[in-house]
Length: 233
Image (cartoon, rainbow, N blue to C red; front, top):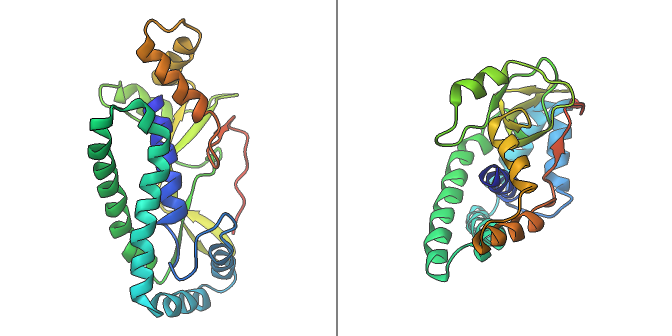
């Protein structure tokens, strides 16, 4: 469960700083340029594509530097949640590994960023007819998780670990890939619920409690009850 939360935080940081339509303007909480291009793609996809291609062609060296700076920013922000759980001699290795993950994400995003179609990551919980995939960790019962993905559970809590990629055009947002979720009916979630009510057996587990309090509700990370609605456009 802790792994799912950390990966969910990492995914949202990558979405905020790396999965941008361009790097020509500073990334802020409002993401006004990103929202403007999304709205334009829904109204006139060809005009949005032309506008985005023009922006991407402007001051490419500065945009490349901004992307590199954003990679380091993601590493710094995610590490803030984890450094207290790592020994000092482990932190540099972890930071370097994390940097490579984020750098790889930026390389994967580049051709998508330059695509004629407008692709946008989407963390919104799936609706009744949406396809979603279960989050599986090493050693988990993958078959049980996949079977659960085909069902809908009343009042089921869920966290979107990795977003779907949606295409925005014709006044609609159409899912291109499936969202990956961990739900309260999966064993990892139920095990975590049981662990939360138990007394920590050692000081080491007590340190993990610090992480729980720190990431209880990080900005942009929500647990849905399965009743959210996804808007178009």
